Length: 372
Image (cartoon, rainbow, N blue to C red; front, side):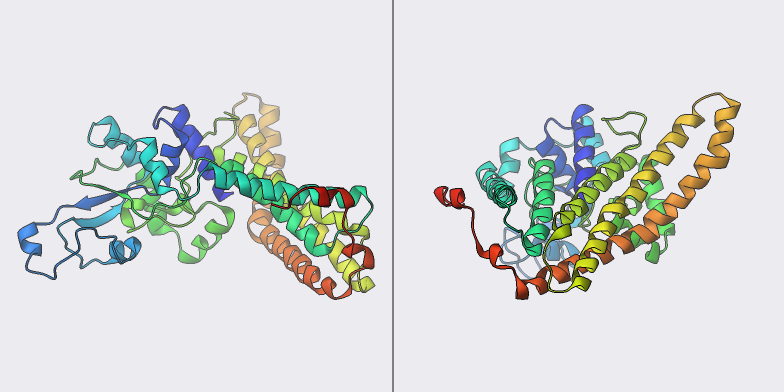
């Protein structure tokens, strides 16, 4: 969900002409711009001499966290979020770097990504060929097939994303504009939300809902840029609900792949039953989250219609169901889903000790193609 939310935020920025390309959007969301304050060179000259390049021989993140650092290149303050970057660009106080400069920060080009995708697709083709020739798939291959699906989806979503921003661009912009309404809400949510509630946000892919970058020294790992109120594919649907819906469908498809081994041979009948239940849990659990998004979206749609009957239906039926689905989505669904994944992973390795003889046979025609 984190990857999808990040991609949707970038699409929103490109469609609203806040950035020229998706690569620029990803660079901004990843914390590519970091605010610095200038330090008096004569004052810092009395301290320990520093290297001209602060990134030589050390990790830039660690140097950013060093509050005592006062070197001629400046003192790091905080990363800039997309709101601050866009306003600085509009005011002429910041210029976005060329796309080739951002590409230089990415150590994986399209050739590397294409090779990884080809290798993943080759594995999928091999699994399909085994099924067509009525050869069994091991449980470990079935699990790997599910991860191959996730790998393909993530690569498509993050195709234009730089690999890592290890050296963000230093911005000496002086005083920033006053926080806008959204930034004030984020700062308040970050200060008022209890720490144990914040533990659930990364699991749901919504960590950036309680993150104010001006209050931090570096961009959090699961930060997606804080999505706008509505998403571009479906204007009536909030972006975060759209991301949850798509993620739920992908999660259900991931669990559904495990059903391929429904009739496979297992060492014991108990293992077969456990595998089936684990696969069912992973397939059905995301449906509750999907139902939550549909119920909330339908409720928002009914509120915009001036009809007493529909408003009564929303108040007495849709809203209670939405509340129930929220509880299930936050507390029960993640637990059930994790239980199903743990069961299937353990069984996938346990069954390797007693594989059928057909599992060691290969499809004849695959030997004609080189393995990537």
